[in-house]
Image (tube, rainbow, N blue to C red; front, top):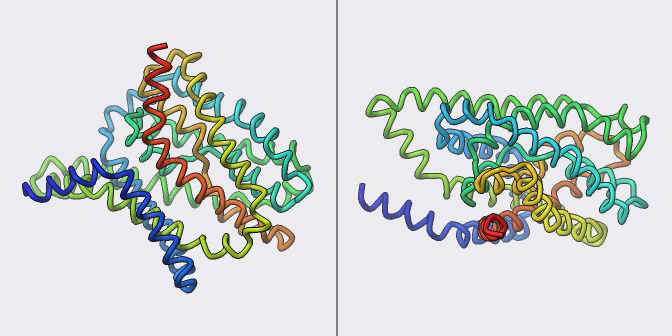
Length: 325
């Protein structure tokens, strides 16, 4: 048991380097063996579901109940994601407004806040992952209701009629409801010796699970992105700027809302991280004229994963210095 604990501690200490390694392995696999892309894509949701199960398992459900009553935090997250972010997205998207498929992909992915692996990265940065977990169902519901309105405002009613929102519901059940229920049952079973061992084993596997998720996502999409890189080059600066801008905006929103340091870190991650894996099925279901849009969404995933690995170290320093200031 001592050697296992030492191994878990070592992985947690070196997790950022391990995540970068996982990104590199995924890129090598995806580019070196293009045939791996399809099975890797099929594995994304199952792997992500297991990762979220482990994430939810690490948050005591009593804390989730307390977080739901934190109205100030929830209000700040909602205002940041559905008032501030749309303004930022509209301004940044003007650089690709002349290319309809690029614009549609950018709007889909940047207008939808992340509800899955953002919780993992928030916890790694010392943020309030319990409060962000409590906000996840509300964020998911809000984006399902508001996305058609934003698309109507930015693109037009004719396009909105072609969008099928059913994949949103499926993702909500598979990536939020089922992992959450499984985590609740595991916490209940942890009162027994066997249940406690299962819980400890799953929690100890957090770093390998995150590495697996990063590898699978990159391996599944890197080949397609590389093949269309000249066309996709325009959206990469948009995604980089979005991530960079949302750090100070998220920190400022946390200060205005008078949120504590862990809460501010969670708010920064919520504002900067997008729902790319969930909106991808929606974009894949669009008419053939938007065939490039799924790769636009995937490009955001690749940019964001690199940014999140950096933010795990950056955000605690930014928010800590802001609190002292």
